[in-house]
Image 1 (cartoon, rainbow, N blue to C red):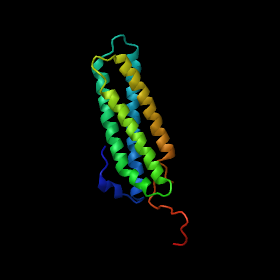
Image 2: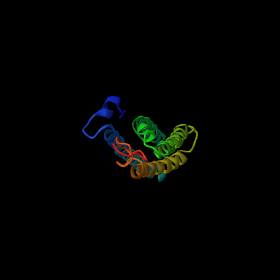
Image 3: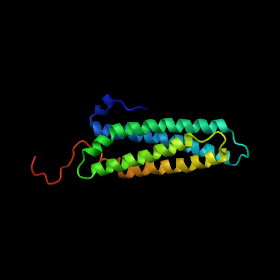
Image 4: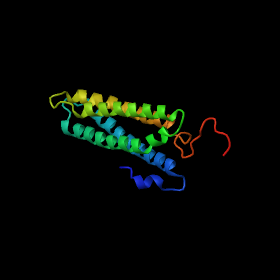
Length: 161
């Protein structure tokens, strides 16, 4: 799922639209993975002795896929936002902060102690998966829109061509 620098410039719509499309495709995959996590958690919460390994393996998989996605998104989307004055740099900063929070939350989940409660791990995974799904939806509504992720930057107070 890694973004390829050469792929950024493919397609008739330009690199910004290609970047946006790639990130949206990753979001679709992440949603499916997070929904699988929620389904597994729901199944394990009713179990008095949930199986530790499948839950921890899923947490590790989510972390790996999501971490790669964040890296790809930063390579593809942040430069576009940074160049979109006047508000793009503020949007880029907010996206970086959100990514830092998400990485920290994923890391905390992945370093859950072996002696820690698996029910607590399942509860935390459920909360994080729900929050990440909401973050993805917000990002798609507010950041990954064609009006922001585009190649033709509008310059305020520019007159003429």
